[in-house]
Length: 472
Image (cartoon, rainbow, N blue to C red):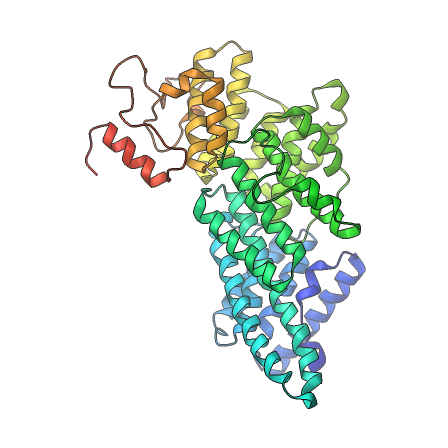
């Protein structure tokens, strides 16, 4: 029993065979029963409970996953002195809580997990260097080396979770976020972790494509990453996983910048991957934009088959939405509005995104709603939605997209935003519209100072206050 009790649970959520999952659940449950029977409370129990929560995540049992994650979270508060078990417990809780808790509330725990495991790996590295000085302790050196690699892997998993939640929550992009990724890239480079270096370089290029103008923003080619070059050097599972990750990011870029040909090409790739993943946030981001792109393209005769793919993604978010996921509901409503466009569907989706503060999704839905209203010859309402989308993209930090909109629609260059958040759920309705813009024909409507595409959200608010004559 001691052997079972001290067993590391890191591989638990990487198992794919349902039979093995059942065996692991049985083993973990026997361990818990043993601890309760003996009345002893080991610090190992927290990560064991956390592993149990991840097993239920793997089987889409939201209720039990949340129950075990809550128990793990409570127990982890009592074992803070045990850095390793505490860090592993927090990691399990963060991964499981992605099912129900807002992504924005989980960025800090994931980032802390990265830091904690990085500290643990440093401690192991010191012990390893000491053991290598003494030939008689070779067996310690070997085991410590394996342990060191495990700690490094967990620290990078924490950072991966942080970035996926950051993107999923629509947190503000900018140089600060990119600088964090640069630090991690150097960390991976020093440790020779090539696969992780590729992943985080890819993340940084994705953020740069949204923030800085480029000739082809839906392709991951730039100062941080070159997809074509990297993929040409990879084989086997490394190529398979990297292509999945790059295509997941690119389909989002293709949808944001509305590149239909790229959306179609990427759907051909993504439809070959299973609709499952050990990381809830990563699966969320992949299926959200796979579904959106599928519904956006299925109206074309040569892409009608993608409707079935969109339905699968819609079903995933419908299930999570009914289970109480605050992250899934806005995506579910967005998918519904893309599948069956209507004024009510778009307004409901916009309202849900605004309520959950998913500024990235709110910007995209407003733009899609504007396109819908334009087809209905409601130019005034369409322009209002475009204006909301324009400022929401800036708030997200997607300045390259905002610039694209301003080039395509001249009136946006003279628009001025009044409210901190969009009230676009009223646009296009029969009720009085609470417009977020004013006429640009008067001197009062023209900003005295232009927005900078590299300015922060705080700086933009100061500019608005100065232009309105208010003091800071």
